[in-house]
Image (cartoon, rainbow, N blue to C red; front, side, top):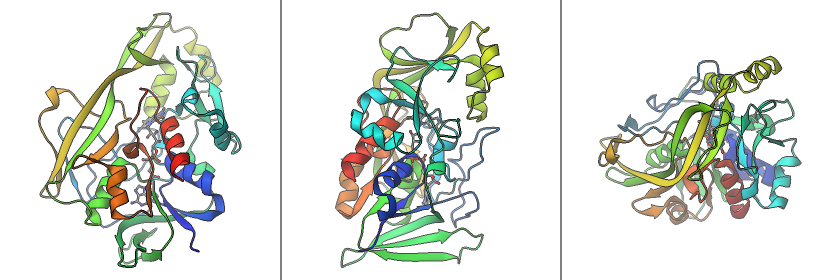
Length: 348
Ligand SMILES: Cc1cc2nc3c(=O)[nH]c(=O)nc-3n(C[C@H](O)[C@H](O)[C@H](O)COP(=O)(O)OP(=O)(O)OC[C@H]3O[C@@H](n4cnc5c(N)ncnc54)[C@H](O)[C@@H]3O)c2cc1C
């Protein structure tokens, strides 16, 4: 029996790897791979963070919708906040993280530079002391970019990878009868389906998120109950914005004397936006009331032509399992990594 194949080395790929261990091989793109498609419209980097590439066949024509792609080992996990709602995960499932040197650090102004009225929200750290980078947890990553896949008449899946090289000819083809676990992030999932001819011109896509705002406020200010709140110390917030994934003691000491914080509010109000493919370009349908979509960075629950992407992939092949934000219908606003963990354990 072939091993399962996990594609993606962000948080979702890491969870799949922790569940399957040696029963799966992990493939993931890195900064050296330069695939054939060179649109960079979804690229997202921070000034001092690890620099990631983004390559898509689809052009980004999404006015007022911000979705992004980070082709790097660790994915968004190289620049993320690491916030995780432990209360939303059954206790025994948390062992998957704890047994792999991942700590669930309670929020505190001194240690994490953050706090929340929801005591279940913590920050994931790895044994190196910084915010968890999923790529550090995964062993034996095969550096390769999944260009496309195809279901053959006998039900097996043919995968075409671009290997870690500058030449487009450096291709790896694999045919498998085992499971393909797609953990490639929202933008790459859409583009991969398009590259593989499982998405076509005129198809209608939809994403949703909880309304999000970030405010500058006093440390002691009591937030309302209409949102999940995470307060972040000013200097900690600036470091995070720059892409620095640890909180030096000296900065924590200075932060104590600053009476203000950034307040991230994830409201209980849901927003949804639709978009379509027109001449190889993703374009929004309607104006969306002029408001910007995607600012929570936890956009999720991808639907294709009104069908949940879970069912859509299931119709392509029952051997494909999808993990990550696209596959989650978040019920509580705030961190989404907890939902990804629970969903992965249920599916794998
Ligand atoms: C700045 C920022 C802060 C965030 N903070 C939080 C937070 O505090 N808490 C929270 O819960 N969530 C947070 N998020 C959301 C976060 O992205 C998700 O929780 C989670 O990290 C998503 O992980 P993923 O593995 O599904 O996707 P990604 O992190 O996007 O990883 C996808 C991986 O797949 C690889 N890949 C993509 N396409 C291919 C391909 N074709 N072939 C091979 N490999 C491929 C990429 O290289 C990457 O390694 C944040 C996001 C951002 C951008």
